Length: 558
Image (cartoon, rainbow, N blue to C red; front, top):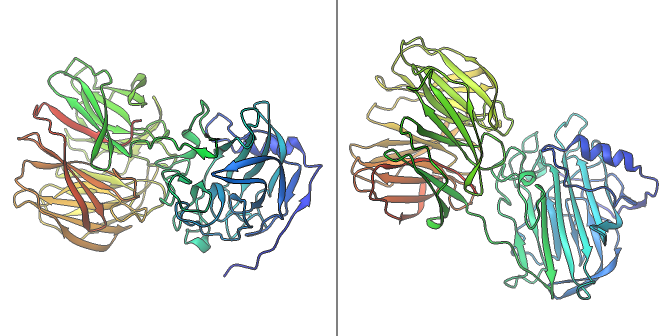
């Protein structure tokens, strides 16, 4: 039960600019400060779910035909033009009747920890502006023990120099480490539940009068370590973490939607690479970053090594030298930077990638195969650098392979699923960096069933297991909660055995992972859009008859 709310506002003319600078700089997670100084003449007294009285912003704005020169500053990451908003669980901005501009609509609580919301007039790029600062803010229930805070900002910029009523909306983000309060269903760390929404609406529901940023309401998406981190992306700006929307003639043209995911291809005969940008089951773009003509090199995987939300390329030439490796950082579907990383001998096999230490950057798992010692290693990565490498616990027996990597318990750190190729046994290791903190066998399943993929099929923030029996074309999903199966079911058939799972990712941006298939004989490809244990849509995607082209990975590269 949350407490009652009230209007709260006091003048705060003596708020120190130095204090504001310390707050923004200390919580700048990505090295480029998007949040700007100023707009701090007033303070919204520490509160939970409170709002100001009507505030004069100093100029007139035309917001989809709603003309106003005043608004309400609401504690929960938004401003409204029509009336104060005390709601703490974010609602759908595409269907609301509220006139709202929301840089981060979620349950902000400033009573006991963090800093209060400030607001006021100033300048942005030389133009008069009104801004609101949610810098170093806590979530409900506010607690000094919380060390994860958010820092974001809204600026409305007067552009009456173009025409009366014209203005810009600027959303700035320096750190996003929580997404909801516990009253909105989050865990104690402010993760999960009904996640934050970002966007705006004039409250009519008419087409073209609202916008909601992709990733809204999707668990984990906007976090600094998420799939669509706010601090690493931008709109109409060259600064990461800055999103600018221009209101002209009463309208705001939304940005074109970014591809939800991508399919990365590698031609094993020529070394060429290709990227298909995907929206659901539609291919919306094709790019051809340079490959490596020397076919000693294989593109063994794609993963986000830099933490920018884009998947990079991991290359390996196991038989060159001591087993050479390279990483290419990818942005805008092209190679941004490249470097060799340490070698590892060819008796070590690539086990997969995952974020073992929860820093938002994927790491690399290796397993020694010959001689069989049961040794395993994890390399913690930071872009093109191996930050740290160390052994993780042994697992003796040549039959054990890394069947998949994913966050089975939802703690922000990826775990390892091991599968025996000789016995119907499967184990999960719950990981914390190099340490195995928990381990258990999960129920037996016969060896003709292979782990075909790991993904979050029901959108609960925890990895699930996709099984395939190629001999009979059957497929199953186990919905996982840590080491426990919380649900299981058979999904659609697909045969013959030449149909193989080529990747698992969220192709339609609904917060649930989907499945991409490739027929290694015919060159056919398909995508299944999933909702838990149900296939909600299945469709063929473009044909690639040259079977030298293999799918090396899936994940956003734009």
